[in-house]
Image (cartoon, rainbow, N blue to C red; front, side):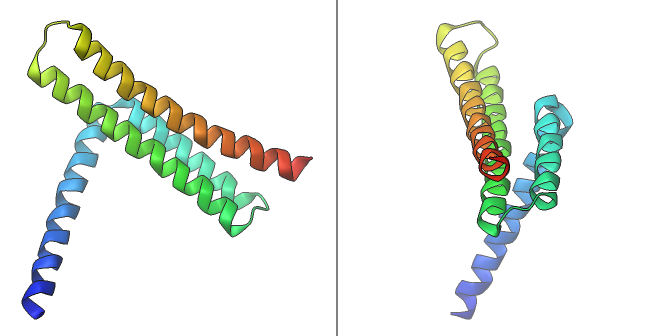
Length: 123
């Protein structure tokens, strides 16, 4: 059992290292990740400044993190497509456009949550 736990801790440690390396690489090269991060900071600040319940705050914070995750996946898809070929191809464009649409839908979900929460609290 001790060996199993040690192995799980080691794997978790490597996962953290690889994830941090991916975050830093995307942060350095992706302006949109930095923009969404700023939007998340503003959103989180508002979520704590406004009289929201714990569940409402959790929803806002979780959706903000999902937008960042979608942006990272979008970046991974774009980089992979660019690695495979620099030639323009309809399938490459489709993959990139679909990944971008995934980010947009995730951001839209966060916006809808904010709109409904504000409507409930104002109205």
